[in-house]
Image (cartoon, helix red, strand yellow):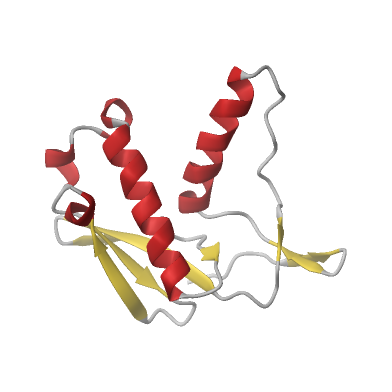
Length: 127
């Protein structure tokens, strides 16, 4: 599995955000757009080099869907917190993600950069 491109800019790592971070950022952007403010660009946001990268893979009906980009987070608890925040958004927005009964059997399988499973967060945990 190829690692995302990390370039230094002003002494900090710069890496594209993973889908989980983009979902949270989209929520913030919707509030900005509604207020008439210009949409922020999410490309190449500064990231700290010393943060480990976690991947929020999805297990859906026995198939693992890999998060190819990942998110730089301070620790495993932060990765689990991010997974729960995404699930709360999914529950709150059934017109976007479908009714919970369609995805309640799925789970986030959180892995570190080495591919080791560090946590599993069942979607049903927020229902």
